[in-house]
Length: 259
Image (cartoon, rainbow, N blue to C red; front, side, top):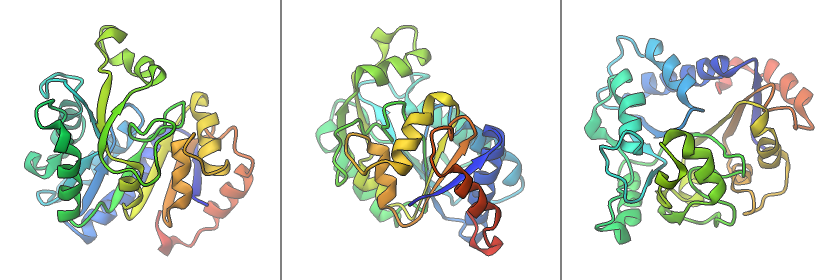
């Protein structure tokens, strides 16, 4: 079972995870981070700014979870633009060391294999940040995704397109396809940190943490990982049967274990 940490709010979650990332970078200046986009991980990136002030991050490497297919990389809602705007520039990372899946239609047939090779060449991801969709997807691995899947092109569900429409002028402009790290790719990271905030994520969180391991809820794949941490606020934890146990174990966790 994943470790579940229930915090007061998103800011507290961001501080907790940022402390762990800062510790990793201090121990290994060339650490490899798995970067998620969307609103959920923003508190982590915001908290990291103060933790990394004055720290040499020139060797830090990063791999984004996913990208839209067919979107211009310069489009403000391409994940290349989002990662640059929300992570690379604020944290002072070297843009050449931060990879995003290649969503250009030209060469898309081998873009997934190229990305897998790049992650392997970097030595694998040390800490992968994850969010979870209301339908339980992680990355863009929609319900039905194989637990053995690697980086590949996927068709987005209508629900996911509707969820992401808030970032575009209309749902008609939300791309239909994406290229995403697979569940198998994600599970190869050394440490998974899944974040979720708000009552709208409570059902997905409960299913991912305490429900059956099933491709119908891709987030449940975290139960197969030896080091997975789920950090949620009280609203997102509302559906957890063992919430009191999670609070008790975290309150009594040995400090040397870290996150």
